[in-house]
Length: 158
Image 1 (cartoon, rainbow, N blue to C red):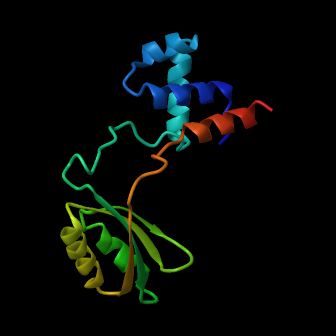
Image 2: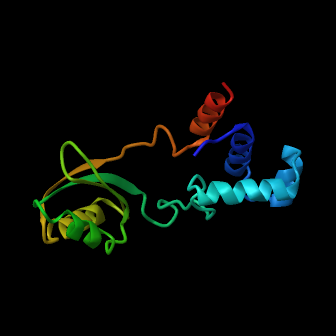
Image 3: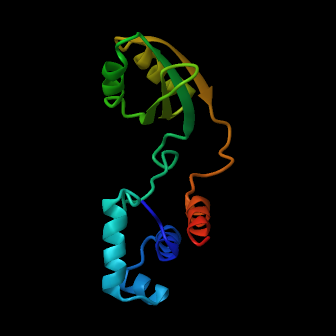
């Protein structure tokens, strides 16, 4: 998927002003509404835009503790354990990884005791050999994509 300068401008607006209407985006970009809609449809179809929902704060939902839990899985059980992780509501993301462990999960909890309960639940899953937990002290770089969008746009303009 190739992203050009107009796509980059569209993506920047979507990230900076997510609640604006398509009509207003078109006006701000100086393009026809149909052109903008066609671009948005293509960006969605190509998987560049994957969602439009709100970003929620686990801390504001009463889960201020954040940890990354590495999970080592018995050989041949990766899919089973991965499927079982989906049933644990405190796991907000899970990835297959290389290196130390087989899975990396992002876990939220109400407090340290709750985190321990979640980890004990993970350890009890069939196929889980061991876990290693790293607690987050402070977020240093919040989730962001605008710098990447801008870099891709600059590369497209060369």
